[in-house]
Amino acid sequence: MVPDVVSQVTALIKARHRSLSSFKIESLDQYLVLVQRISDAVSLGLMAIAAVALLVGGIGIMNIMLVTVTERTQDIGIRLALGAGRRDILLQFLLEAAILSFAGAIAGTFIGVGLPVYAGVLYGVDVPVSGVSVLVAFAVSVGVGLFFGLYPAQKAANMNIIDALGYT
Image 1 (cartoon, rainbow, N blue to C red):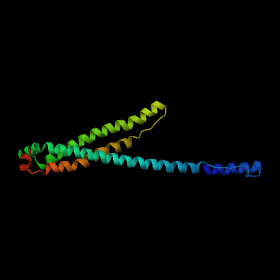
Image 2: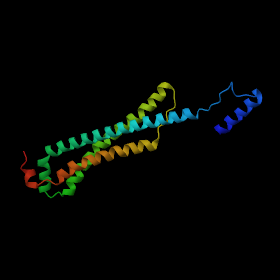
Image 3: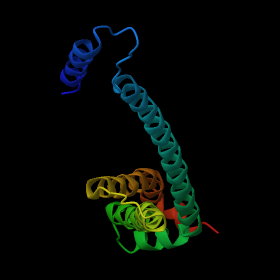
Image 4: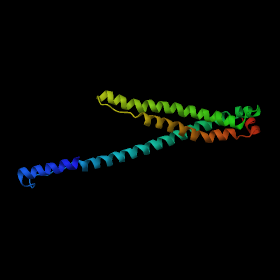
């Protein structure tokens, strides 16, 4: 409706003053476009920061899991020798990676929801938090943990029983 209002105001000023030379009629559309561009750039920057944070977190989980696999090599060999299947070992380490990423996702969710709500209470502003975005962020966090935990889990599951039992 903004263009209609601008044209009506222009017609009214022409009718009352016969000339528009002393007046300048503008709408804030150009500023809204500028604000939208800035908002898009900030959103893109935040997504890049989030992607780097997820990558670093995933590498951290992978390193923790690789250390865990190395420390528990003899235990893995004993489980394999007692009849555990490679799938069982894979699932065990994937479950451990899932637990790590789940704990990180819970902490991230509390921080990600808590800070805007706290800022809103602190400054008396209503800060909406989308439930869908919280669920997506939680699922992506757990998914990244599982993705980066897959390599250590496969490494554990594919160990040679003899080498694993003889590891000191």
